Image (cartoon, rainbow, N blue to C red; front, side, top):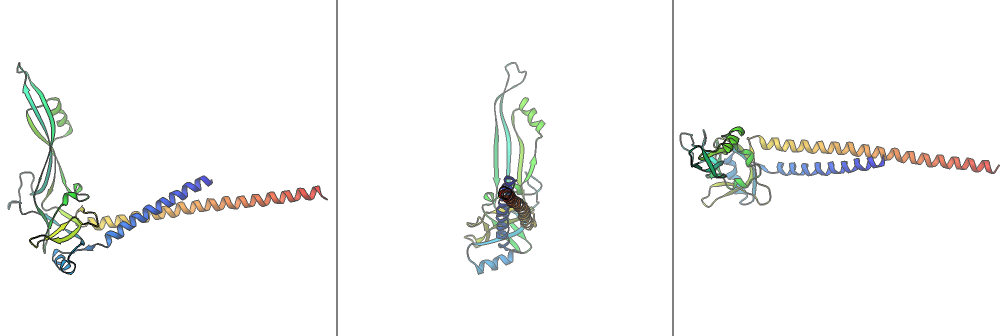
Length: 264
């Protein structure tokens, strides 16, 4: 029983510490300045010239996007596009009956262009977004080949290369970014990698608020089970302690009775 109480107390301590860590992270995010519109960001930078940590939301925009809104890699202009290709080097057999694979490799290519967040009041340039946490989660995946097609192309290779998978950040995508607000050399508003806080990117304009709410909910979950485990462990210890005291008192009473019988 005491061993169970020990494990429960360890679990209670672990849950409390983990819940405290999560709560601290949620409080840290909640303390960051939330910029409702980019026009206000200009005013905030006038008040604080450096190390202004903010949360901004908007839609992806790029100066390189064609005016017709179409792009060779998708229906919308992609400001970031990564793709995996399977390339093959083959030659025809001497008798002309088929192709022989001389080499086969996978190629990874990335295309990028400067991009911005925009809302109804203005635009903010985003710098170094690829280093941000969750950046890959913000990309839209495109599967150009199924697993069966990939397998068939390996078994029966053909000359040339084929695109297997693409991931892109398209214009018009709603994002929420935690970063440091600043101005570049030309005086334009930018969001960049902060020194004192992780650079974070989330899909959707309400994703940041949802993440903070989930963190607070998770911290309460761990605090709750910390109390449960701690209460059960304490109850076991009290029960065992009371049982031990009762046993000692009973043994002393029995010893006293036996002494009285031996000395009438």
